[in-house]
Amino acid sequence: MLWARILLDAHKRSFNHMAEEKSYQVIHDSPLGQELSEDECRTLLDVMEVRRLKDGEVLVEEGAEDNALHLLASGKLAVTKSAVADHSFKLHTMTAGELAGAMGFVDGMARSASLHAEGDAVIYSLERGAFETLVEQHPRLVYHIMRAITRTAHTALLGVNQQMEELTNYIMKQHGRY
Figure 1: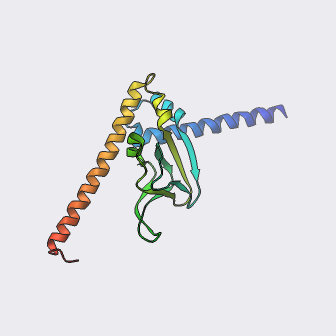
Figure 2: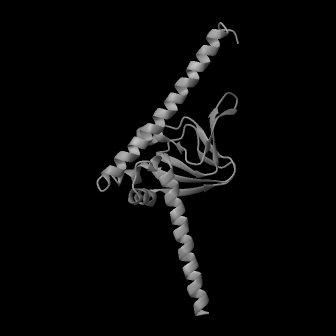
Figure 3: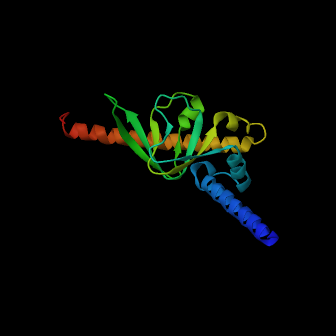
């Protein structure tokens, strides 16, 4: 009986270590971890909350104040925007490794779109308050996280600019006709 308990405890420790390692790897492989050391990834992981969503569950509603940065660890999230008469349309489908809420995390503005799970999803969320606790003891970590957020926002802006250019070219070729 004692051996069974010892083996069970060893198995649990091994499983927890594997789960921790997987969590570390999610951070390390994400845009947030590009410039971080292993210790910095683990420090960041310590202040992040893990959320598990079922299919259709809402992470964030459009118009809500949500001061968290979200990293999609696994699964998919639909990014939707409200339209007329209680209808919405999908802007994007997020996949593992993508960040959501970067600008709201920085500026505190209400969310411009909703995020819904498409199937089961795991999200690592970093609340602004938890992040701010790192400023004094881990300034290098904070600096690199802010660089990652800026890179993410810049990449999104470049994508929007490219779509606008393509739309303008299409309209010009059609001479304003649909």
